[in-house]
Image (cartoon, rainbow, N blue to C red; front, side):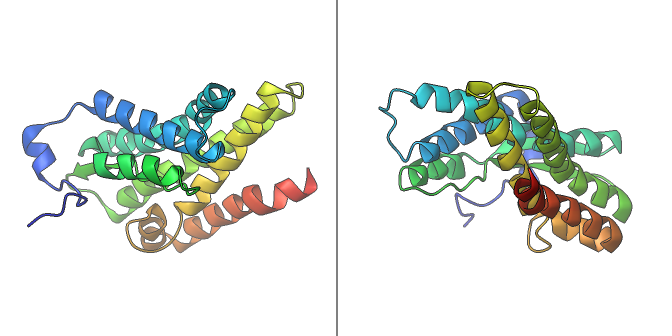
Length: 206
């Protein structure tokens, strides 16, 4: 029997999907979980809504654009692609956030169609690269805004997207890094080097 936490598989192509609704669920659930994690589970604190807004702009949008990048490139190569939110994991991530842990598994883009190894690798690469680009944009923003709300937003946006870019380049299992490495070890190495620089090196010299 299929586990309730199992991916939907090919059945999504038979029944279709509302990608906009699925992405909205993923954005809302991930943003809420990250905000709860940031305030240590104390959602009654006076600044929770401010934290939730920052989470939605930085973490939530980071995840949504990551998945959209996969979908856009897959469709550009002629594949059928849909994003499916993982409802059980979204709920679980919210519950776990109250315990001081942040686990994000909002869903995934499922695609089918003939794709070369290069195309599959580029589709996988699109997500992490999107997060790394967002990290750089938030970093640039942080250089031009005054201390306060916007500098906090820029800082959170930088760190969460840099980490998301690096985390998704893990070269194993379902992670994007496994597909990128299988296609091009050189591209994999360059991307990981950039991600490590953003996560560990730049914060030390800034």
